[in-house]
Amino acid sequence: RLSQWKSNGFTPLFDEYRNALFGKSAVFQMREQGKEKTIRILDVTNEGTLLIEENEQQREISSGVEWLIQP
Image (cartoon, rainbow, N blue to C red; front, side, top):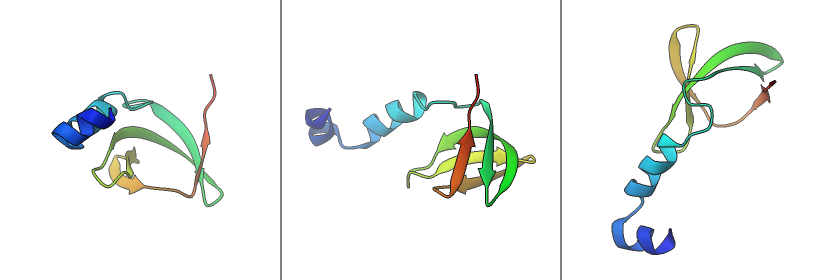
């Protein structure tokens, strides 16, 4: 991938990463500041933050949450 990045830049790799994003469109439980929430993963931004939907509103998160992933 390094040679691909050197030749074509980061955008083609980032698009591939976004397409393979774990949990994209899936619903998860998370705990943020001690409060459990149900969210849906939408995408990842160009800056690397996770774009989620919570209570029918979109927002970005980068850290500070605990994921409660159960089979």
